[in-house]
Each structure stands twice: as C-alpha cells, then as structure tokens.
Image 1: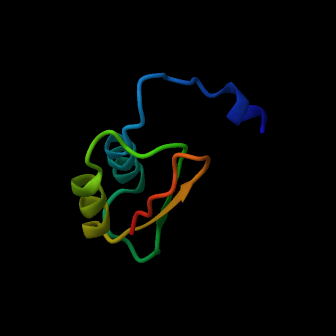
Image 2: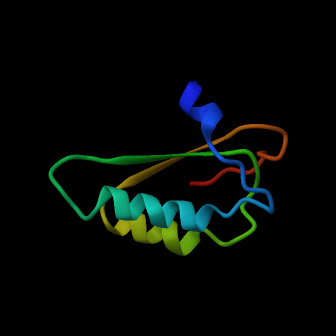
Image 3: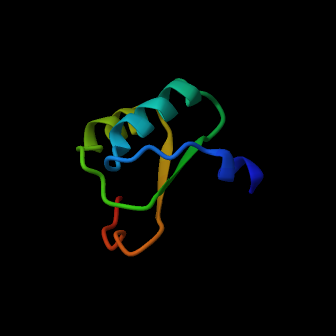
Length: 77
C-alpha cells in the first residue's frame, strides 16, 4: 500500500492504450509461460486502446481489466 500511495497522479484523463503498450514492452514476446496483464482503471479511456490490446494479445498475453469507481460501467473484453 505504501508504494501505491507514492504513485504520482497525472491529471487530464485516462489513456489506457499507452499503458497496454508499456505492458507489452515489459512482458515481451511469446514464451512457454502464460502471462497476464492486469489493468486497473478509474475511468473510461479517452483514447482507443483497441490496437494496443490487440498487439498484446498477438504476443500471446491475456488482459484482465478491472474498473474501480463510478466511471467504470463499461466492460473491456
């Protein structure tokens, strides 16, 4: 919890696409191990995360999206 509280908050909207792109860099390409990116968000993305999500899936990874708060009535699949 201490580390979460230290996280810098950047105002101006939620951009999920760049977050997924960063996950792709961190997870790398296909491997023998199954990898899952867990995305936590407090709002609907103001960008189109579809291309980044599709790229991550093509690398062989799964994405689990968890919405937190009143702005999260949408479902990402």
